[in-house]
Amino acid sequence: METTPAVGCHSDGSARYPTPLDAVLRRLRCPLCDAAALQRNTDTLRCPAGHSFDIARQGHVTLLPGRRRHRGDTAAMVAARESFLGQGHFGALRSTITAFAVEHTPRQDGLVADLAGGTGHYLGAALDALPGAWGVTLDLSVAALRRAGRAHPRAAAVGADMWQPLPLASRSTDVVLNVFGPRTPAEIDRVLTRDGIAIVATAGADHLRELRGRLGVVGVDARKADRLRHAFAGFTAVARQQVRWRLALEPREVRALVGMGPSAHHVDGDHRDRVLARLPRIVGLTAAVDVVVLRRDATRGAG
Ligand SMILES: C[S@@+](CC[C@H](N)C(=O)[O-])C[C@H]1O[C@@H](n2cnc3c(N)ncnc32)[C@H](O)[C@@H]1O
Ligand SMILES: [Zn+2]
Image (cartoon, rainbow, N blue to C red):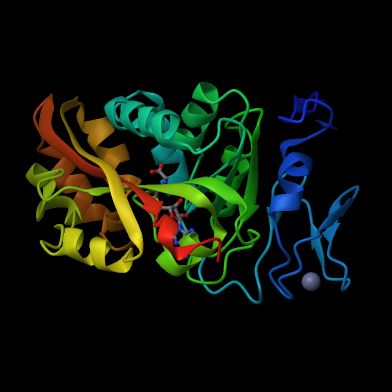
């Protein structure tokens, strides 16, 4: 089926872009030589030194510095995540992240990068609320990137590894989102504009506590908040909130919730099925997610 490419108009009011990838191109950089001037030739991106990266049929492009060391979430995990989030179960979290993005973004028409952004669920809502902004989801999972590329008409999708230097140019990004995903604070610091912000969401101490131990849902390290603060030394927390709500789920929704999380990597499927078969018709769960807005300390200069 033919699809019409999204057409957008950036803040300068003049430039029009056939796709979101074209719109964010000047904010990307070559993962092999760090050149920040990638050019597009139909279905490849090329840097001045001649490194070239294929654009997938679905519109995403993978910018890795070498061989793929990890794979990210599997297709089954991504499908579970899309189905679960699509039912609005994490809507309270999405609203909080969006409200923080609108309130604290240094500019309305900048770049929002969702790091380990999965299907682009949170980026899509932020872009809806920031009609002049462009977005990019970075993730390793090809299944996630395929969906992220459709998450919003102003969102591009780029394959990248959070444990390696990011293929974003230095000082290119106004808002970083990082929701339940791996992160490298030094790289977030490098890519943010001088007054840029990072919105980081992590599981609270009692998030999904009713599932701990059963179904392989792992507990949350009590020192996580301290570790986060330490990792983001050089940033100031300008806002924070613990978003708490109750989930009332049918067993098949519990299956999707467990299937989309890290336990899906290492839980024996038979054991999971036995536990799921014994669940009541409706399962009540605690959801508790810590959201913090971090701003680069201005005293560190343009850097
Ligand atoms: C728990 S999911 C969160 C996804 C999204 N932020 C959300 O909340 O819907 C973690 C994501 O990190 C991705 N991921 C895991 N390891 C990664 C890595 N080394 N680099 C980039 N992405 C990674 C997975 O593919 C997955 O999409
Ligand atoms: Zn290059």
